[in-house]
Length: 222
Image 1 (cartoon, rainbow, N blue to C red):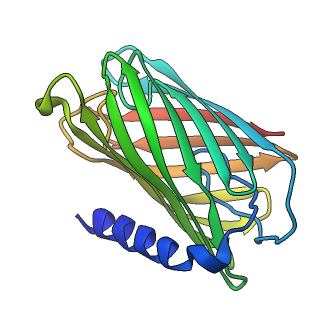
Image 2 (cartoon, rainbow, N blue to C red):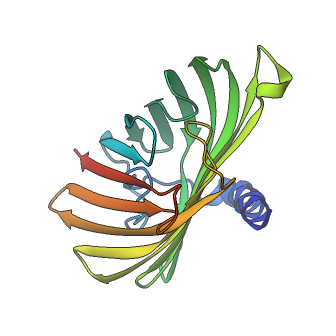
């Protein structure tokens, strides 16, 4: 519930600043929010591709690719195995960013979901950065067009600390439909490293339990 309230506050804040703060921004890799300082000059297209591999205790693993394209305010995104297994989604959103000491980014989006799950999904990606600390949230609500019982809220909150330019550590949680464990919300930690335009991140959920899982993610910006 706390993260849903946080998401609502982020969305309301972004809308309030929309008239004066629409700017180009460097879009971070999915699940790795370390935004660059906002710039006012129009920029070129920016792309990112990430592929995450889930290793799940007692279940088959799977890959989850995400591709993004950003041009000034415009954000486009394509995902697979994100809302559900064997399910794709296409998104369009609006980038907002502002701040220097406190860097705030928010991208409200709307998406179409198709495959094992079919529906319409409003969502939001947001982050708040202060010095070496970043708090971020990816969330969406899927309205299943086939059955109301298929409606689902997905969220991925995380907090990271970057002691060095190439290293990130932090805590993470997720509420997902792609796989189920005895925990409604999976919680864990992450360790990530950067090399040039590439990012390598390891996530461990529910460590020390019979429902543990690992996500290994590789991303590149170009």
